[in-house]
Length: 169
Figure 1 (tube, rainbow, N blue to C red):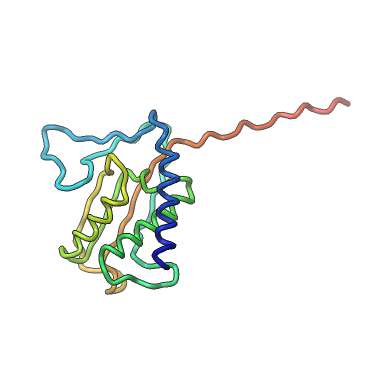
Figure 2 (spheres, rainbow, N blue to C red):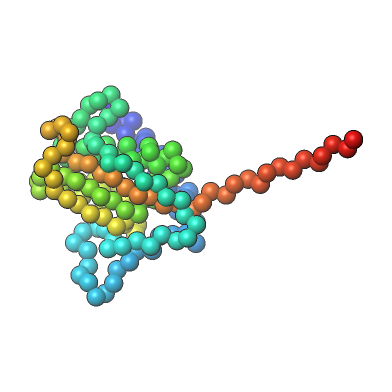
C-alpha cells in the first residue's frame, strides 16, 4: 500500500467520523473519577456509551498492507493498523473518532513511543479507554504492533417503509 493511499483512507475515516460526531446528544462520556490517579497518557479510564448506539467490534489488526508489505518501524505499522481499522469502521459508516475502546499490543518497550504517537494522532477527543500490553510476539517476527478496537455511533435512522394504496377491485 502506498502512503498516499493510506492518507486517503484516513482522511475518509475522519470525514465519516466528523459527520457522525455532530450528533452531540449521542456523544460518549469519558469517566475520570477523582478518587484514582489520572491516566498516564492520552486515554480515558472509562467511557460511557449512550443508549441507542450501534457497536462495531474489530478484530486485532496488524501492520500489513493489502499487498502483503509490512513496514519496518513501529510508528508506520501503527499507522497502517489504524488505516485498516478505518477501512473496517468505514464499512459500518463510522470512523476513527468513533472508537471508544482500544486494546493494543507491542513486542517491546521500544515500540511504545511510535505506537502512542500514532494512536494520539488518530483517535478522537475525548480519547477512548485504552490498554497497552507488551507481548512476546505475533505470527510473524516482523510484526511489532497489533490493535483491536470497539467503536460506537448513533443508530442510523431508517427510512420509513413506503405505503402504497392498495388497488381497488
